[in-house]
Image (cartoon, rainbow, N blue to C red; front, side, top):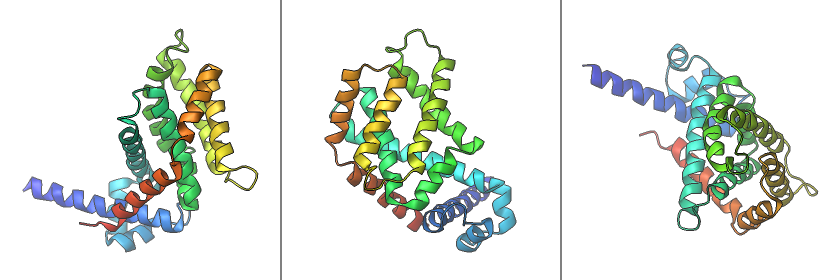
Length: 225
């Protein structure tokens, strides 16, 4: 009897996550209340609290989903082009910048994710393991704890670029270039390598890939099976 019960709980959890994603994207994280998620999902208000505790915990689960999909898209795009982990890291980061320019409510979700302890530490943990592998050759004397601290610093940079929308002066191209140069300088990547990375990223239609990620998210929230 335990297995059917677990399956039912898993289905209920999925319904709540679908509704939370949908309402965060449509109405914004701040404007969405737990009771709105309960009404949309058909799951009781108290049951949602028992499963997720609060709205921040829900966002934390969604951060996992989005980061995982960003990495999957980036890896698939570059799998037959390059095995340079630095290019993959920057591609994934730039993809995130493009996504936030396409939907203001997603911009808010990212901004909150980089601000809340529960979600920001997920981001730090996710990227810090990567950056040690990528940047150790530029900073050979650094230890794991040093790279974790640098991830906190560069996550702050990412948040700053996310919360400031592009305009006619601060275009997406300028934002991307400035972000790459600023971030990679912290890791002491040589200037010529930074320019190579920028040229590589500019060879892709990043907006199209960002739209693809959003399309997948929209499919996710519309599929309640």
